[in-house]
Length: 130
Length: 368
Image 1 (cartoon, each protein chain N blue to C red):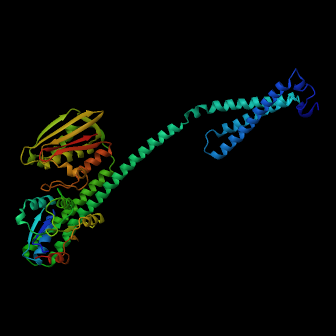
Image 2 (cartoon, rainbow over the protein chains, first blue to last red):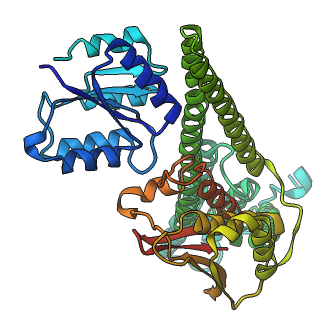
Image 3 (cartoon, each protein chain N blue to C red):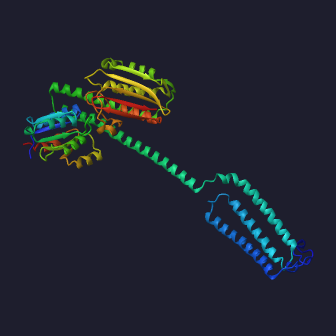
């Protein structure tokens, strides 16, 4: 079940700065790749050869330009990228709107973190690291 | 009996009708029974009318005419009963008086009818009423749909606004937590800078929200003849830096050169469409913006076409005009412009449509 890198998908640079510093503080070694929106992350994952495919913990924002978090999840669901272990998603959003929570649930995400990211909220997911 | 009731009941001055002339039994009874039958029918009709009036309560037009009819028919019925009675009781005075009263009531009925006739002609038939109801229902449904749209717009607005306010505030919260746990001078400086950035983001979002609220509220006081060319010149002048950076070739084709409209509103519309074309230009080719006005089916149209980045409309058509939606992330944008344009245009009964192809360009067409 372990994953070996974090894919961070968020258009908010300051939020990314905070998330990355926090994760680094807990685990200085882990690989973190940030993307500005769902499309960039999707393209990256798609272009990555099958051989190199890693298992990912995806920290996913909801509201982003070009392709938002839910559209990204939809694309993943409809693509051949989806395997249970390689695509574990934790939502990371400012929104505590019930319709977003519901929608996230319908995609069977691993968790839903309200920003700002805090050590206690991310560490449980990081302990899945292998 | 001479003077009873002015001689109303006097019967001795004439022979009963049976013995006046030569009646056969058959002809006599034929006459009498016909009279009685008419009288009876005439006395029955008022009961039906009365029942009808009672049942319809206040819901009957021209109720006085109905009462007049009841009187009229009763009187007519009475004349026939008296006429039948004359075969035995030749009370011709009484008969004359009843005929006289009937005559008066009949004329009152005639006058009453003539009076209400114009109004009665205005009464709608059931079909007409149904048609009216259908039209009204359609209108209601239409306005209901509009209200639902406004409601969902408002919903999106609140959702988006609260998100865009929360994000920087969450960031500030995270940044402050970071400040508390570090004493590295470089990091402290960087964090302070990011806090400032976040604060100005909050301020910017609040400005945006109040500008949206403002366009919803403002009454347009500057409606008059507005020239497209002049408004375009103002827009370009206000964005002189952006224009200098984009170096667009601007093609003007204002076949309709002016419109009766609010100057500020037209300027906001053109401002947003033109600056969008400037912002979302392609780096691969020189920017060309084409502005056209034309007339179709009594409406004035304005189209703004560019050869910029374009938008994938298959995925984004619904979101394009909603507030705080953004489709490109490399350029500064607030996701508010097209929302405002749509609002402004629709507020004045027009609409806006879009056609676009990724990496080819976009054309927005405003129907006034």
